[in-house]
Image (cartoon, rainbow, N blue to C red; front, side, top):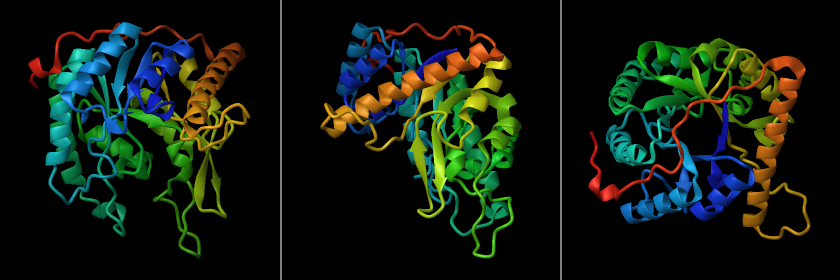
Amino acid sequence: MYFTGFADEAAHSIDGQIRATKELGWRWIESRKIDGANIHDIPDQAFDAVCAKLEAAGVGINCFGSAIANWGKKIDEPNEPSMAEAKRAIPRMRRLGTKLIRVMSYAVLPGKPAHEQMEDERFRRLRDLTALFLDAGIQPVHENCMNYGGMGWRYSLRIVERVPGLKLVFDTGNCVHSDDVDAAASADGKRPRQSSWDFYTNVREHIAYMHIKDARWDAAAGAGIHTFPGEGQADVKRIVADLLARGYDGGFSMEPHLAVVHHDPTLSSPESIMYANYVEYGRRFMRLVEEAVSAGAGAPTARNVPTPGLCRGSITSASPP
């Protein structure tokens, strides 16, 4: 078991992301954005510089938090953008020794019932992407976000059943602000929120990786309010305890999504508050894991993940498989 996180929620620059990671005593970053652009989209020269800094710091990238097939990609539009992102990601992941990549299942078609969501086309595209990654020795993991698979546990299960080799990254907090599309709507047409625990228990045998997020639903505002781990309605403590009791040895990746909430009068800039929130979030989650172990969840085991600092050579000399 190991800790990691979307360190772009600590700092925009790779320098700040590395600093936050090392302050927590961690070796890993789940890389999403660096200076505002996804790691698979930054220029080659910028990527070379990122590699050099990671190498010098002894910090690794355990997962690419890619934009592939995400909620910004429509299933009724061409798939070239996601395929191009995948082909750009692979040589960079090989250079970094990164073995996991987060993908999604395209945006939900608005106003369409579940049976009119172009399932077959989604599964076909995901099979093509999964095969591309598996052939490169990379494991794609699907996140239950604002996409087809995020409509509920039944849809995530359909994906893994129809896309051989694809596994799941379960995000604890996404359920809190997502409709349960299979539940009956109330008189005003609203549906209840998903249950993180129910979603988790139905898909846990397919989980290879975890995103830790927590939130509570504010009915008056009609929105999810993100919290520190264990303080919301995402059953984070219960899910983590169950995972550890079952011998889970994968990663726990922090994705705080916290607004400006860190109450320290010495912190005046949004950047410093963002950094402090991320570090505090990681510390609180580590304590949550310690408490789960003390309560009998079972000691977490060390996982054999790639050694950080594998950057070698220039990305311009690498080519996709």
